[in-house]
Length: 82
Image 1: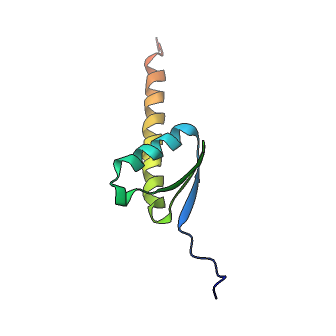
Image 2 (image 1 turned 120 degrees about the vertical axis):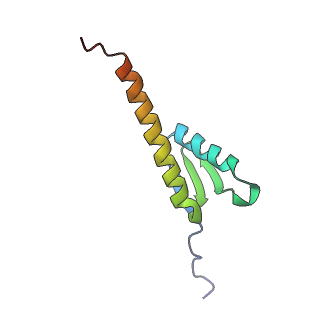
Image 3 (image 1 turned 180 degrees about the vertical axis):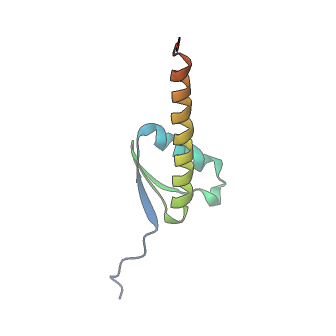
């Protein structure tokens, strides 16, 4: 029927501002036909293509792991263990 909802084309990402900026950066690296951000909703929400959801989530996870690790490393360097 004509009133049936179409399949979900977009995936809502809710995140903090630095994470959103990183996702926008990833989007900018893509060629025009491969960009995945459908809509920039507000400071902490993006609508991305459902087909890119896994790729975006994995890249954000890796990015967060790297940032958490480097923050811990920096803290550890200042400790005097003597």
